[in-house]
Length: 61
Length: 444
Image (cartoon, rainbow over all chains, first blue to last red; front, side):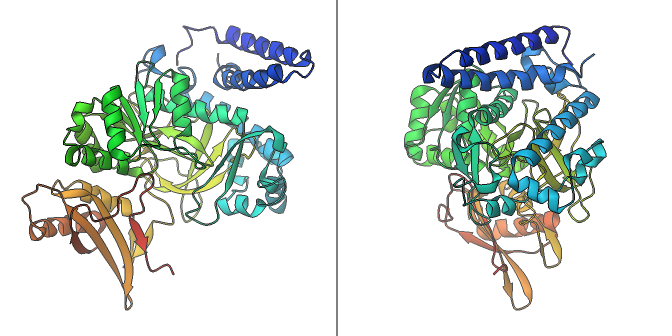
């Protein structure tokens, strides 16, 4: 398993921050569709980062 | 088994995760999706309630088998009502659905498959695992010789190429000759197609365009839709015809692209166990199978597809576990990919018969063309298997010469006798997507 070359915990924290910021952007968009719909797409990509990185962190030593 | 470098894998963490940690991750995700299905889907709730099952009953790994399975017919029965057309199988508000697809309907009325944008991203992500493991990189120009439509085939191949950074050429509207000429013109380096169409394209290239497929410069071919890329003789034919590496994958509408052959070509496909779970169970008893080389039925769960989840889906596909692969992935290998469907594995003359084993024999004989057709019928009380084949163009062999050896090999492989018919080259049906070469006329 390759873990020595990357800091997964730091990556996971950053991913959580990205989610938080994008969700905040949606909150302050005033319902502008050009913001909300693009944020939805970003969040789907954030979810992929969570599945690839964040979900596994708790199982690593 | 040795772990390779970080850029050898799409996800070097998940793909090389030790089995105990992978299992723990799977268990967490499994419980999460079962809870989702129960809380959000009227269909799953009904099935679970009728079976007296509650998501909290899953406390240990062994409890997984207590979760009721879902059948294709369950989706079908829950659909074609409001919210139209997904009915009780839908788990999200209809306005969150951005993608529509459907199954082919070969086993009945098609099943409608809704996906949210996030689901769609997930399906494309699964395909990114597939193509990256097969060596697709941002230096590749990938030609896809199919039109994408209501069926899920090749959509994700296209989007996964974009994700990995390949340049993707959608060759849907063209005919076979035009596609081949476009591949030549653009100097495409990779191709995605069904095994049947890979062979058809090579044949057209040689015999109609008078071009050796080798000269087109295709280096790798991803196969989908049929088991051929893991039938050794079919794979060998394709690799020889194109002078390219041919890789298999298995996927479907309900489960996405859940498995892939890697560049090490281990004689099977890795199950993407980070994003889904494949349980292999005994066809008769339903008991879990963990040991290699024992065929069983695959029960599939996709962990994070939300609009219409796939939880312990009875795929009716037959597979068997194989040995570890040298690529360093800890994802288990299904030896030989899929071995067909339960509804295709049938008793003929009292013997268990799988049509894929006939393909292996036919494609292993260079005197025979790529196409064949297999028909099981009744004559009185006796089963009759008719095998229709074509001689390869240019072969010096006669039907009489080939028939004896073909019969001998079929007998060895399947323990059955066949009525063999030789047909003129090019007269048997040609297919582009899923070939239907096996017909059981006894099922009326």
